[in-house]
Length: 151
Length: 125
Image 1 (cartoon, each protein chain N blue to C red):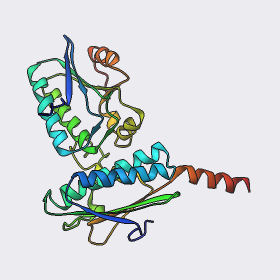
Image 2 (image 1 turned 60 degrees about the vertical axis):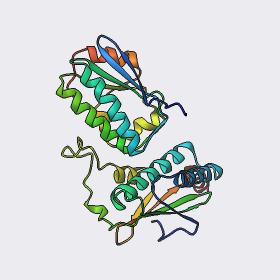
Image 3 (image 1 turned 90 degrees about the vertical axis):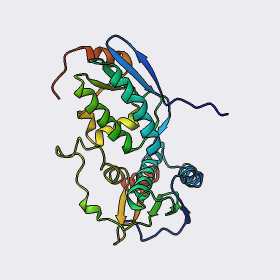
Image 4 (image 1 turned 135 degrees about the vertical axis):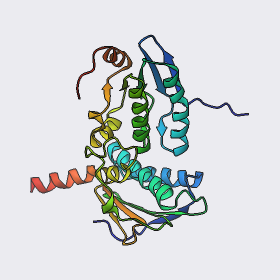
């Protein structure tokens, strides 16, 4: 499970500004530099975008004065990213399954489902205004399981 | 003054209108709104003409795009027409699979097969 907050870089941004774009680019470049696969990078990119959209739209109610704090720590074996908004928080268990027949035609409600599908671990603080996500480097995971199998 | 880049290109044919997304990434709410404002008039202008959405330039999208596609499909079906998607790259197709929307939309490999598929009678999903 993801730890409370990763020990890494922390940046606060107000909506999708060029500052936010720079943070996203830095995270994705960090994954590449640490040898994450293009599939892993796509997964983290999607998780990050969906979490950011949720934080701005649902958390901060698109209030341009409210900030989203992004904390990230990228190591060769895993990436940890947390996003905290300044909203009231929500209960992540209250979000219905968007793939069920009752919800499949609904316009929204797929962001968190995609985050959970693409990231290896996801958790929230008690208030529900901070999401922490972990993605393991599939290449290093593969190598360590090969090593274990050959022992 | 900087030139405004269009978000879509439209090809009108007798059997289907083909809308090609021109952006590589479709993420932001304002992008979605602009697409909606560009695509809806194409649908409204053509009664009983099917619509093909071509994703050949799209490398990345957010779940908001899925919502837009559902809105478009509703509008299309209300006008007794059909919607097809095509040229979706494998990583993006995976998003459709995970959300099970690959079972909802008619998805084809390329524009030609989409146009051909839409001119054939509809299969029950």
